[in-house]
Amino acid sequence: MKKYSLPFLLFLTICLLVACKTFDAVDVYTDPAYDDTEVLQTLLTQKAADVRIQKHPENRPYIVRPLKMQGIENKKIIFEPGVVVMAKKGEFHGKLDFLLSIEACKNIHIVGYGATFAMRKSDYRSAAYVKSEWRHGIRIASSDNVTIEGLKVKSTGGDGIYVGYDNSQASCKNTKLLNLTIEDNYRQGISVVAADGLLIEGCSIFGTRGTLPEAGIDFEPNGPSKELAGCVVRNCSFSYNKGAGIQIHLYYADPENFPLDMTFENCTSQRNGLAAFSIIQVPKKLKGTIRVINCNFKGIQFIKVPKSLIVTDK
Image 1 (cartoon, rainbow, N blue to C red):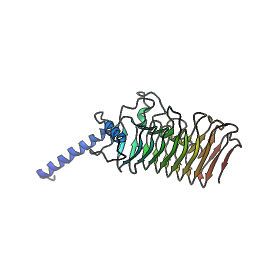
Image 2: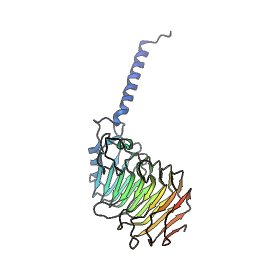
Image 3: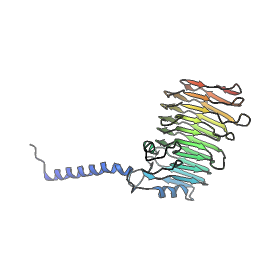
Image 4: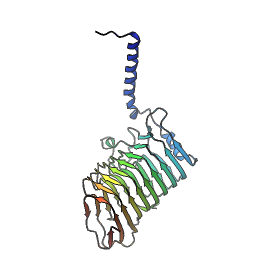
């Protein structure tokens, strides 16, 4: 039997202890002692126009309760590569608890190439939680000139990203979602409820599964006063969503007064559970234009689409 020197055995013991500590440290994701909410909340809302958020000094995710930006203007926030913002274990019990809410803000630019926003989708489906489909990753409500680019948003308890309105009922204006990876979300990858000027470009949206409609992206105004005006989806891919890759659901649109102008260009939608591209529940006499230009859609579904709604490839 081979004999080892005492220094080598001591070295081996230290390595094993470090390995065990590292293994245990994986559980920092669930350790209630970790809570970085106040740190990040301060950075998101402080007066400085430019904020750079570096990787956590302990080389772990930022563990947070719901974060909120409200009434903030003229701010750029950069999450550096490797930054992970993770929902805290055992929190987010409210039906409307969002990882980050951006409400009534103007001129906000969030950059996160190589950074991740992650929630705990499987937890929210347990008996410990009240059932909800609105625990979104990022909620943008009644805000102007918001740009989010480069982030990965995953495993939320609702939509990866929601674009809509707050109590003011005002639509979001000039919203840009660029080069995002949106995966494994509960209700939709992206929901668009009210938008006046929207560009979604270079995004990959996949793996939506949990509760209906389970689409990659769902354009669905939920009141007659809402609008889908100047919406452009370009160079995006939609795959492995349990519902449709792209769904346009217009049941609540007011046929007498609903601005509707949408363009889908150079997009791919395939291997989804339902249609690649779906237009459903369109009121009679609703007017508007939906352009589908140079897209690769494997399976198209139009249900009760009136002739007044123009669907064209030009």
